[in-house]
Amino acid sequence: MPSSAFRNAPDEAPTRTAEVFRAAAELMFEKGYGATSIGDIAQAVGMTKAGLYHHISGKQDMLFQILNHAIDEAERMVTTPVRLIDDPEQRLRQLMRLQIQGSLERGLAFTALFSEINHLPPAQQMEIRSRVREQLDLIRGTLLELADQGRIRELDADIATMMILNVFTGIARWKYTDIASDREHLIQEAIAYTMAAILKPKK
Amino acid sequence: MPSSAFRNAPDEAPTRTAEVFRAAAELMFEKGYGATSIGDIAQAVGMTKAGLYHHISGKQDMLFQILNHAIDEAERMVTTPVRLIDDPEQRLRQLMRLQIQGSLERGLAFTALFSEINHLPPAQQMEIRSRVREQLDLIRGTLLELADQGRIRELDADIATMMILNVFTGIARWKYTDIASDREHLIQEAIAYTMAAILKPKK
DNA sequence: TTTAGCCTAACGATCGTTCGGTAGCCTGTC
DNA sequence: GACAGGCTACCGAACGATCGTTAGGCTAAA
Image (cartoon, rainbow over all chains, first blue to last red; front, side):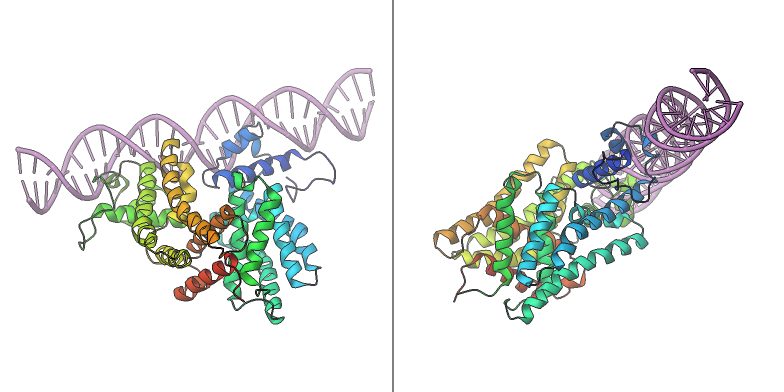
């Protein structure tokens, strides 16, 4: 088993191991960690349970790797590019857009699978939690920046941060409902809703 | 087993059966349906697994009854009283207040346990879903009423409804974090946030 | 005597995991 | 070109543990 199970060389056919982890992530997202059996995952990729264990080292470790990979992806596709944006409002808008796009189109199910974190041993729980906190701080910091500039109404930044994060977890759960059928519309509405909630009214 | 497992005569010591269901609801809320074993529930009320079956008819049926009871409670404590409020804005404010209060103080975990609905057989899934839809329609209807009166900004009522529901599910999940320590503050912030998001700016 | 309330014991099923084996492919050696 | 050896990717079978559930029996109250 490679050190990072998801990685394969760029522009190359996905490794079998990567397929396994991808299928596992999808199943766990749909049915939850507890309700997803090793047999389910094996069947999804056309293997036996025993065969799976050539690619994985255990069920718990799978969840751990999936969560870490999701955070990796979020950092690569959302956090990092967004940090380059100077204007805090534009930064927040783009953060929401990228995050929602990511959770609808690609894996990026970390917002959804994060609730399964309690199935991990405490040490790994803390590891994941501290990585997530970094992303939370990006949102919170942006809100504080807006506050400094006097551009948002009076609000509790911590609660507002959770409200925004909440939008992500919620939308991820609607992934297969018709409310998510028009992605661009959903994204624009979600951003407009959030901006109206936090920004000072214009007129 | 009585027809409604939670019911006992008013102002009376809770039935043993009611205790069982209450403990089960709490455990399932914390750990999820799949991760909560019959043994866990039995231990929580000081019984053996076999003893539990004097009070319940099965694990799935337990979840079904818990969800139904939660909806009963929500209808009694939130939906019904709130329908009497004429002004749609005040109606929505009070709905949010009662719903959040209920999910923080009392059981009312239907917003949180609703995600476990897929562990039920399809017929019961539909039954729960149709009952929940009634409560959703109260929110959506109130939004439409506000729109008719020209009091909200231009927004997608369906998406806004989900956003509001999303607040409830989110807050239920923070139940044991320090963000929920000051309940009144959390309630006021959540309401203010939502109102700012949907209402037309005042000035 | 009946019944409510709970027990011990065990059932079959399913779970995550391990063990030993094997078919196919790559690689180097003769 | 043949062949031995090793490695990758998988399989069948079984493990012990735990799961939800049931059968049957005990005890105290009505």
